[in-house]
Image 1 (spheres, one colour):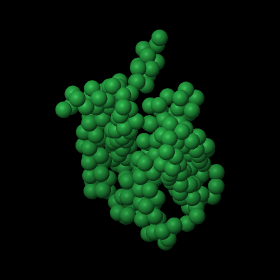
Image 2 (image 1 turned 180 degrees about the horizontal axis):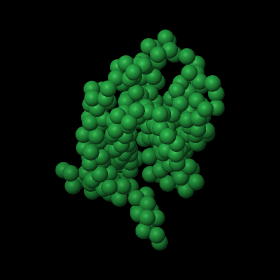
Image 3 (image 1 turned 90 degrees about the vertical axis):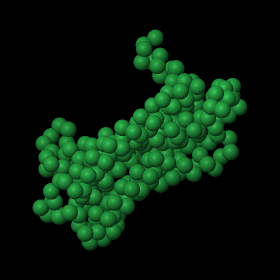
Image 4 (image 1 turned 135 degrees about the horizontal axis):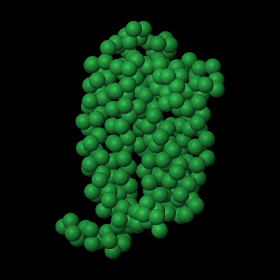
Length: 249
């Protein structure tokens, strides 16, 4: 078997995942802190003010990374939901469910910081713009997954139902991303482009990249820690959990 496929196959075992998460989750948190602090410091205090928006634009360094995370976490949740529904892998069910609260938090931060930024720029806290509305729908999808999972007593049945909802909602992810191109939108388009010339000032790129990687590292640590705790609860009656608890004592 291919070494990578073999690694993923072994990782599907709860005891193996538990050992992996115990080892690496703290490191993801530790690595994320200096990267996030650097990005926040550069964005809020070092980078010069915008020639049109002044200092109010600095919320961009929180708003944009949070928006990126709101979409990427949903993609991770949907991939794990697909794996869980097709191959009935318990770990993927748990990973998908543990993505939802973190994704909802990032989506909420995106909406709040967008409102704070929109007030001085647009003169209003909220408008039913295509990007804003589709991002709000994304929050409702996250909350729907969380609520559906909590509403069913059987954990495996609850996870499968919530995974199905997550897969249905994945259609909203490209809508959020491309909404500023598909419709006439107040929201500005992408300023950092991979295959075309970026329109953002070069001094703003470094803190955005730092926040991009910092939030990814923090999410990885959070997902591992949450999934580890959830698997520990789901497997509470298994021998490996008893052995682990005895070892801790």
